[in-house]
Length: 341
Image 1 (tube, rainbow, N blue to C red):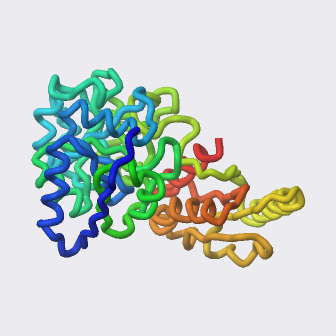
Image 2: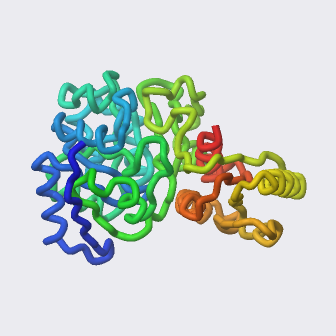
């Protein structure tokens, strides 16, 4: 792939400079690719109706064509032209969770190219909650496809620097608007049939969706593969070998200490992902805290940044504590399991 002179544009999400944003919107209309912040992770965007532009995303990320993309739109009504029909439950979920970290899989209309959907008859759509993402979609006057702005299967980016590290020279523009707030990707729900299926755990919790509809289940991995991004068994992975330590409390801590000591004796540089409460229990090792174990929102927000930091510190092995399997903890554990596969 020919090297691109990547332009980095800083935009304050609380005081958006529309002059800078117009340049990014024009780039999308011209078939270029633009990395931009969403509330979940940074996305790599292109005009969702321009096949040649979309191909550039796959090339830049080294992403296989069998992994479908999510289409980002400005509001619920914008989905109508992109789908065969908007099921009543999709409208209800959209009214409750959009804008926000929820993606819905629906039957696609003829407007959506097969390259977006990996040849499937369904398309994944969401309305992002980040003000810069919303403003970019409005300015581009196009729906925007946007997978995470990183190399394929690598740790997703929650800061513009992460995007620069992975994709500088491969994309036209990177918009820097600081750190993302959710920190893990959107939840993906298949609304084409009942019961609804959660294909990917993410920033909208299972518990919050079940308050709207009880007719929903969590699909197994085989049901989600190809229909939703982020479902590969090996995904979200740091360069280091990641080990997820199952167990609770002292048993988990002792297991991590034993593993870390054994790897250290073999000459490996060991990093540990810990809760704030346990950070002082791993003396002698590089330890990064995600936050208080009960504050799953903060833990999710910090997960990818801390994994990337341990890679930067050239750890060979990363051992992670496990987190409570509820709320955002479900998404954290999903990412750690896939990264450790």
